[in-house]
Length: 121
Image (tube, rainbow, N blue to C red):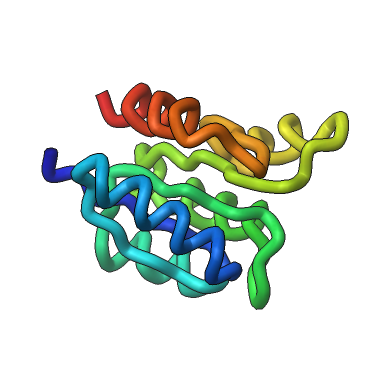
């Protein structure tokens, strides 16, 4: 496939689940443990897609998405928010920050892979 995905997630268990799912599907993964590191890796590694948690240390996912989308060189990279924030208005807030899509935890692996493929096609 050749697609590189940046996973910005601070929880080990969630990172492991995403790593297993996505590498098994043939994607190359880069991992960041906080929003600041996610922004830095987006710039240096130029992934094809970013899976962004919202509750992150240092810089939260909303701010990380805003910073990535503010950079003309990175703006076209799709960002999917993958978050336990599932209250009314949370999806709107994520999209306003620059996220292109929104998935709530716990997620269906099949549904998440479908969204990943949709944004990479």
